[in-house]
Amino acid sequence: MATLECNNIPTHSLPHLPCMQHVLDQLGRLNISDDGLMRRELMVLDTCLAEGIPVAGYVGGGYDADLNVLADRHICLHRAATQMWSDYELGLPRDP
Image (tube, rainbow, N blue to C red):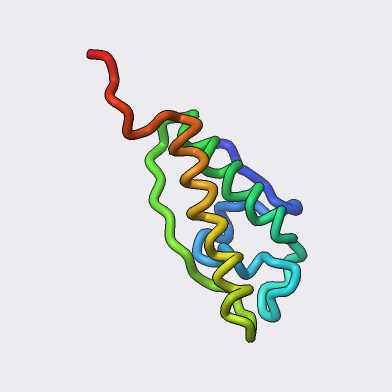
């Protein structure tokens, strides 16, 4: 299995901490921007879908006093999944 990396940290090593990687997260401090979070989600989903690997996603981790800011970080997963759903034409009828 290929190891995906984000800022030289293998993504499989942080499966339960998706938002703690954010630059403003007071606990994780892994220095990844909002754009970086979105790119990471897209990269992971795209790689798994291209290889036919089932994906289950959840939000977790991340700390910010402003819950709207934190919610915006968590929603990256849902936005990326929506984009991949469209890009891979998932949910459309397939020819037999």
